[in-house]
Amino acid sequence: MRDLHTNHLSASANTLPLCQGLLFILVGPAGVGKNSIMHGVLDTFSTVRQMPTATTRAIRSTEQQGREHWFVTPETFQQMIANRDLIEYEEVYPGKFYGTPRQQIEEALHRDHQLLIADIDYVGASKLKEALTESVILIFVQPPTLEVLNERLHMRGQMSEQEIATRLARAPIELEFAARCEYRVTNTLLADAIQQVIGIIKGEAERHGCV
Image (cartoon, rainbow, N blue to C red; front, side, top):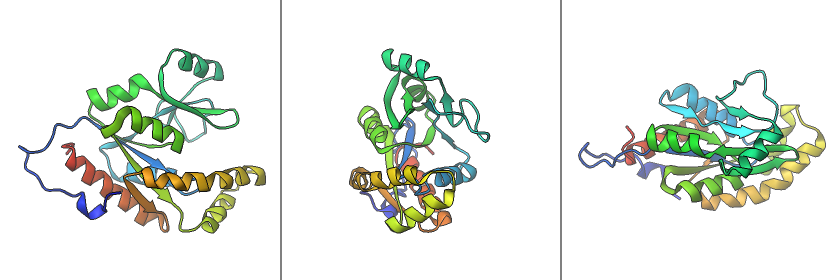
């Protein structure tokens, strides 16, 4: 796992590699604040955009088709699986499928050389890292303690006790995934966590010639 302070490299334009685009994936247990960190980065860092994933869940009032996600029917999602149109997919929660469209992500990275950010389940993140290797930077977001995670899930006020229990039961497995990530950020204070992720993106963008 890299030290944040080692990634802000200084290099001349002649020595920088050609940018092939980068995908920064925020990984961690539900309720840890990945989505809030991602939107804090997007509000601050104009050259980064969110990578939309395909999902069968219902669109929310604050979302737009093709910005946060491609919202599709279960039937369409199954057809995408059959056509091998998804790099990875997962039934994250019962009846709620998420997946990464192959063509869109490859074009964004390898043709358009974009800097992308996404909040993806650890299983999907692992598959994307395997498929896209050096183009993917994994950032694990962890809570200060599991007690704090429990409090944050209850503060949402949008889930039943059973749903919260399901997410907390997954947390130990998700926390083990931290060892496979390039970076680890503890979300104690949201503003600090956002700045840490911005620092990671800037350092990696410079290292890969994407500045």
